[in-house]
Structures are given as structure tokens and as C-alpha cells.
Picture 1 (cartoon, helix red, strand yellow):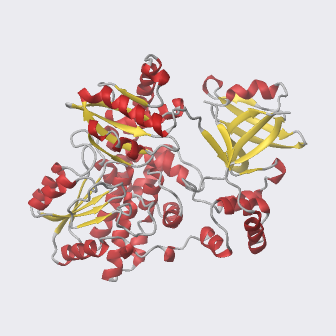
Picture 2 (spheres, rainbow, N blue to C red; picture 1 turned 135 degrees about the horizontal axis):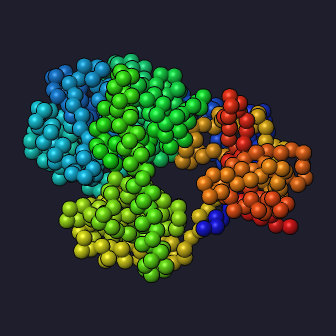
Picture 3 (cartoon, rainbow, N blue to C red; picture 1 turned 90 degrees about the horizontal axis):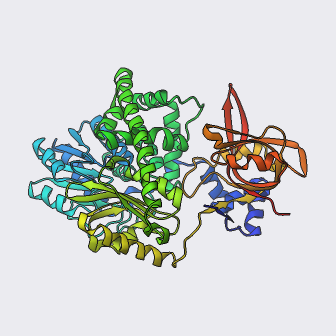
Length: 572
């Protein structure tokens, strides 16, 4: 679909000028900072120099005192503790973090990752039974638990206490020893965007403060927190920005054998690791273990201390990832064929689709692909015994959790976030649920099908692009939700010399372009899935570009290039 280009809200001129004067930067940089909410010298200092000393007091989180007291009791009485986490990247990195740290300080721990197919999402009865078998007196749940009251009651009936560390929207709070969740209504914790591993980190931070453990011991595990932040698509602002900034340094400096092995098998050769690398290289591989086999393999890889073991486990996970890619491609094609062949989807503003033969492990990825194709909130479902289970992905402006709540009479279980969720329902309710969900979406969207919006930070000329500007932009990292890499618009661009198509079926566009007013200043760029624009440029047509500025590493040389997001023909 054609995207709507939209400038981000322009900051006041007084704010921009104040930043120019206090920071001695040019108006473009001041504009980019102001858009990100940076308005003073002190805010700029904290933005450019994220400081671990500025992390919030963990005891501001509701129930933190109770959680740390119970964990301290387990430590002093030498009780066994089960670390339980979801099978996705956030859950497995959280388990690795908490298990590793507690083991390092001498706690007797076991860990447990549920089987996606046998147990499903969240805290499970089978996990409680495992804790009982291992004589555990305490379970710490990570990235799950806040909506699992029945299972927590079951644990309590067996004499096992539960500390919940979660970041999902709660309904009725479970009767656990402590429920740590910044999204619970009565929690005044100042930062709401933590990942599941981030909440686990806050529990360990509080334990360090109470037990006088050097926080540097905990900070050694920030690489794991950073992988969770990148993979779970949480905002990279505030506390997450501080954690990710220092965690990326940890990933760069002292790679654990499992991370090094995954990077090696991926063919990674860049000089630095970014959040983008976490999202597109590490996260899919860690996720593949839970999607195709079992998430415990990912924990095993992240915990491995020997290079030999890490290489062996990473090879297995590489195979899981290859299988995942194949299933993703095959099922996406089948889903598109189904959608295009059924009249319901011509009028609907949502996509809810089912096939009993699809693989449960890739439905979330397929849902994301379908959102890219049709730009509709999407649910992809498969058979799960006598029920259907699936994953949902949303579009801007549609809160999935809220929409599913309005359809709860048809659901046996659901949970998640604004943009992503999981759900299950009785097979006989599929069509009724599909109709109700679409009614809810229609109402939310005002009965108008939206177009995807491409927001840009600033309109600039090619003469504004320099190594100096790029060096400053690099200091905006780590990039991610609510702090994306700056996006620019440049108008009246034309082919300089070598613009051509590249890739399979000439899908992609390799640009060599200049602006009409500065024909001697040429820049290179790449536009994925934009190969159709080659004839326009090659016939001396004039275009407008929306793009980010990236580094291109090739033949031991680093140059700047435009990563083109969209193209339009220039208006006279």
C-alpha cells in the first residue's frame, strides 16, 4: 500500500534555538533532539551519556520489599528456587539472567522453560509439578505469571511461594507472595516500559541493595537484559535506554560463548553490535529454539561456558532457524492465497485466519508478514488439541489487548501488549470471534481503512549530510521504539550515473543519485523492494526520497549510504 508521508511534530523555534546555543550544535541536530523530548543542556547530557547511577530505585516498584524479603529468606535458609520463564527471547534471557546471578551468589537454583506445544504460553501446572519434584520452596516467574492466578493458587496449595516478575497488562492480580509489574494499576514505579528481563533485573538490583552486593556483579549481565529489550520491541527510552546503552558495550567487549557462536554462524562481520543486530541476528535464533524445539535449548546456549559446547548448541539452533525460515515462507504464501480467495477479507478491516496444518511456532511471524502485506490487525491461528491458538499483531493506533478484551466472551485465554498478543478459543467459536473482532476493529478505525504512515524527522538537502552529522546521530544510539534512527526527506533527486536494480527478480534498487540543484554531489543508497523505481530514475525522472543515513562496510572501507524507505515522483 502507498504510505502517507508525515513530518513529526515540529518543536518550537525557541526550544531549538536554546539547544543550538547551549550545546553549540547546528539547527538540524537541535531539531532532532527536541523531537526526542530533549530540551535542556542537562537532558542532552543524560541522553548522550546514559548513566547507570540514574537507574530508578527498585523499591519504588509495588511489592518489591515483599519480593526481596522472600528471596532473602530462601537464600539464608538454603531453599531451592525455581526460575521459570516464557519460551520467547524475553523469557529465556530473563531466566538466564536470574539463574546465572543467583547461582553466582550461591543460591540453589533450577530453571524451567515450558514447552510451547504441550503447555502453551505462561506459567504452567507442569512447571509447578517440576518445582515440587525438585523440592523448591519458591518459584520466580519471568515474563509471565500476572494473568496465571489458577496456577499460582496451585503452587500455593503445594506449599510453594511465587514471586511474579512480569510486564504484561494484568487483569485480576494473582495471589502471589509478590507481583512485580510496573503496569499494575497500583504501581507508582516511574518507568512503565521495562521488558520481562528488565523486571527480573530490578528484583536483582533490589537484592543487591538489601544484601550489600556490589552492583558491578549484576551489571556484568546487562548483555542479557539488552537482548531482551531489543527482541521484545519495548521503548528504548528512559531506563531501557540506560540498560541497553551499557548492555551493548558488554555485548561488544565480553561476548559470552553462546552469543559469540550465534554471531559466528550468522556470518556477522561488522565492527560494532547494534540493537538492529540483536533484533535481526540474535533474537530470531534464540526464538527459533522455542518455536521449533524447546526454549530450554536457548537457555542452555546462553549459559554455556565453553566455546566447544556453545558451537555445538549454536549449530543446532542454526538448523532450527533454517527450519523456521522455511515454514515462515511457506505458510505466509498459503495464508495470502487464503485471504485473496475469500470475500470476507475484501470488506474486513482485520485479518483472522486459521489452518489446522500450520505450525504453531511461526504464527506470530506470519501475522507480522500479513500486516506488512495488507496493513490490517492480524490474527493467525492453528489447531491446539480441541482448541485453536494463535498470535496477533497490530497496526499503529489499534490496541490489540484492548480489542481482545472486548471479544473475551469467545476466548478461553488471551494476553499481551498493544502491538502483539496471544490467544486461544474453542474451535466452534472461530467465525463468531472473527466477526466480533472485525466489528471492534471497524469501530476503532472509524470504519475507514487506514494507510500506513511513514513519519520523518526533518527535510534536508544532500549538502546537509556529512560525517560530522552522522557521528552525532550515532550518539543517539541505541535506536529502537520511541527513539528510532532519524528519518529524512529530500526532494528533487535524480539519477547521477549508476542507478540499477539488484537482487532476486530485480526487487531492490541500488541508487547513485544527486539533487537537481547540486548535480556534482552524488550519494549512494539502497532501497529494498523498490526496484520498480529504476526505470523512472534511468529515464531522468525526478523523485523524492525518505531515508535514514547508515554506514556501509565493504572491502574494509566504511562509507555513508542512504537506506531508502520510500520513493515518490517529485511534484513540479
